[in-house]
Amino acid sequence: MKRTFAVLAALLLFGAVKFPLEQAVDRAHRAAYFRGATLNLSLREQIGQGAFLAALSGFRGVIADLLSLQANDAWQNTQWSRVILLYNQITTLDPRLALHWEMAANYMAFDASVSALNDPLQPRQALRVKTSREYMQIGRDFLERGIRNNPDRHALYTRLGFLLMEKFKDHQGAYEAYSQAARFPDAFGYEERFAAYELAQCPGKEAQAYALLVNLYRKGKNEHTPTLMRRIKALEEKLNISSEQRVYNPAGTPP
Image (tube, rainbow, N blue to C red; front, side, top):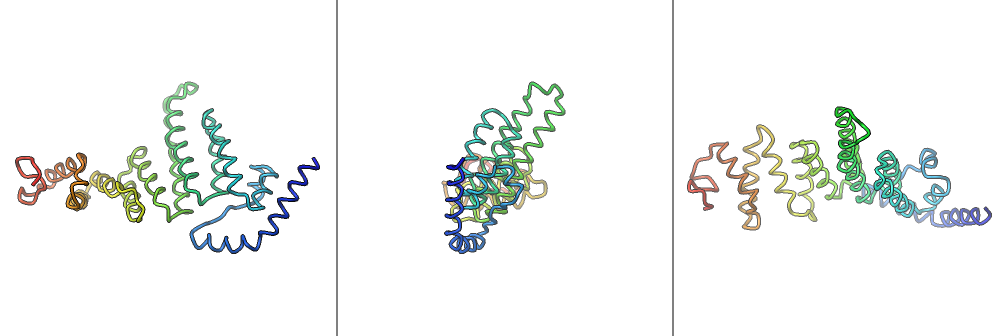
């Protein structure tokens, strides 16, 4: 017990020494969209007094990493409620690490939702579907909160676009998320194509989508993917594009 108190006292002393430096860092973080951790009594009850004091002393990232290990164990044991609880704590402690938000979203929107659909303990399909959709929404919420804390991280927009496309079939939302991701200098490169693909599936947006696809085509052969070519051809037929203006001529070969 004495050793525990000595460790906690050392942490508090260390925190007091570095507090002026942390204030300057905090101002810089806020300028970079860092919203910081809400170190209140609710979080203290969730993570325990020792971890809470460590977080106060500047070890937020360390505690978040330790909780991530616990979250991984909970995931392996399909303890979905515990996964949610732990990742709420993790993202509160370390909101500027995009990976935390991505992992939480993947665990809930994909793994937990599929697990719920195949739950052998729930005989009613309607309830399995309902629970699955609730997990999908929780995953979406993690990504949307992650973006609010990290509007400068394109990967979160990309993950949101994929989630909306795959799980929600929200083509307009996926288009907007992929378009936002594509604007970043360090974008992966495929977001612009995926944005156009999703827009092509939005009723009334076919002409806009066709313009985006043709613009991609004209960037060069690296963009001439089979999917892009099929989408262009399909929209040309749907929009009744004249043969002179088509990317594909009537014979079906690229000009």
